[in-house]
Image (cartoon, rainbow, N blue to C red; front, side, top):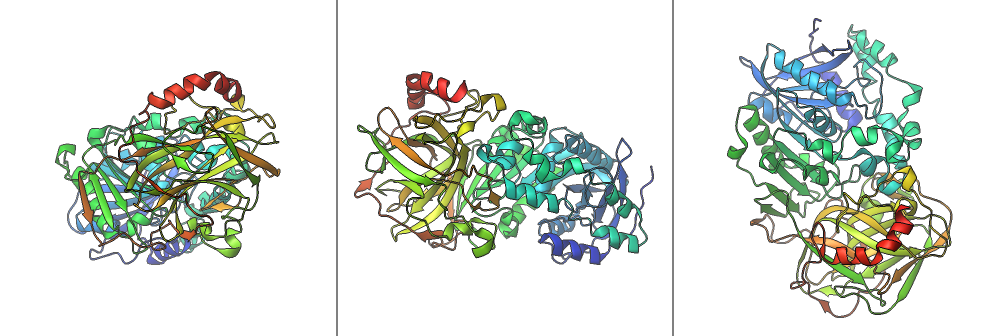
Length: 631
């Protein structure tokens, strides 16, 4: 089937940038040769594409931005405008393709359709066959196109050479749709609108003489696939095959090309759980970068853009993994609102295996390495308004700025270490192993990890959630620092009112240094209101929740401590002050920290990926866990 080419209108590019807050600016020093058209899939569906070719003689390697927003009308789509011009300067084409049912592409919109990956593989093969292409294709993008790059790479198209996924998801259910088994109402609602961000182009294209775009838009909508309605109707992992077949860590193992992956720890939209999926990749072909901050903000860093362009060029030009000169793992810390880090820690290994440490809750409300010797209980009202309430009224920003709202007395339980005697380099996921009781059949739990600084300010570090009825564990995937819940309908079990019940809450991966003199604090509260871009549809029935501490009810925090880095690059004299670190806001601490000092320098590991103290605890309480969490 023939392909129609015609100029990409600058007005179209500008409109896309306005609609989706694209980072695209001027086209850069190299003026590309712009064209657009439609490419055919094997079932006859026509996908809209937009293409920027470098000046000069081809053929050229190409970087594909395959997206559900509007890549078919703007090859930079969202947030790729800083990297795209650098590729053109290096003689690399940039092509954007709108997936089926979006933008000006034909087909019906189905959220997270299992066709997206196979379609992407066909697109890669089509690009490789074009006369302007030298047959070498890479995929890249932020968020949606990052997800599609992974889903396509799983298909192993022969022409694919590398992928650069920035802030993707690794699992649809656990990362986005139902964090902790709680419906992510805000994200599903917003996506219902965002999936149509390319629709305004139908009018513009029609005025330019192209009727195909308007015709395609008319056929994209299916009332059975309205994102928020459909997502609300499939609340368990086994409710829909897409949860386990679209993209999972097990599927990501199939990717056989080099990957430069990037995760934002405080990502307020997709979270940082994609880290687990990246850990399943072939270490010899994987480079990773983790940074604090918001969703996709890494593309504003000139340092990262240079790394991204180097990576794509290296593998598009036939370079091998052994020749790409970059650390296997980079941890950027103190990434500020100026979009550059204060500190870069590097490691020559991937994945990085931290030491597992445990802090036990004590009857006085402190967290310490030794198990408690006496019993106690702490209670909070559920769901008393938490600090993230009234986001859109008071703080119209979908990041962690809602954390700045007041902490109301009685709405949470806080467990705190004494001041740390030395820096604590936390790394990876963590597990809040809680023993709770409530005169209710179900409650939703939010745990918030914060750093209480010597000046009395609390810096946000990370969060996790769990609906108590979803507490059943997937024993094959769970680890001491990573509880993985089954989220299957047959495993759902209500609480027995008044009965003390163990549950493990996953805290998403993070890399954060708790400075000497600071304290680590764990809040246990209700997820009422917004947490970044997430408004979780919590169980609204009021109750009182008690957190139990004692030898037989070992409430605790199990987390990882990173080894010393291979190298440390300090870009500023000191880490940015409280309030200048992106997406890690600070607020006044509502209570004092325990007296004394806590040293964890010589604390032994409490178990790695399996075994140690966790195994002993599991064996001791296996009958109780089996009865309450699985049956």
